[in-house]
Image 1: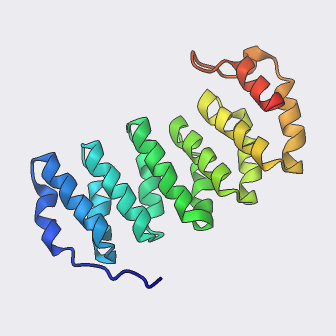
Image 2: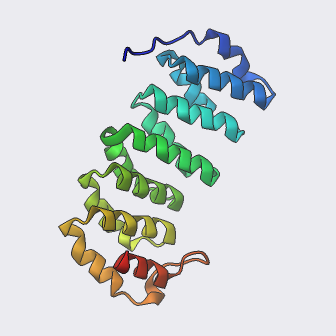
Length: 196
């Protein structure tokens, strides 16, 4: 199948600054559909919009362009106070980049944001790159339940010999030392790791 030619971005630029979010959304959607590499800086700027519909089209546009410069910009979104839906969209875009995103994803496992660590662990699981094994093992000591849960799930899926002993040691921990919250108890995490 021949590669689609990109379209000009100029017809959409004026709408990017409109006070009406519907106009901005349509402008970003139009940029996305051009598949024009010149849209890159405008799509990155649209990530800072306050409207989720605009942000979604910006994320999808960056994913479709496939420009690796988008990876750090998308990762920054995970540290913001974004909705879970936005984080899911960012995660899907990062997974679409595949192995080229792995080094940046591994580095983000050190983020101060628990949400970022959790989303990135899930991305690494979905990409399936074994360079993530050791950093995911380190996440078994995470003080927050969501990244810990994501690391357990990823390590279970990898079924790598390097994670066998750390997972066994985790399952042997007393419940009271495992971080939990009201939605995910330590017992449930241990049980899902042991019997999944």
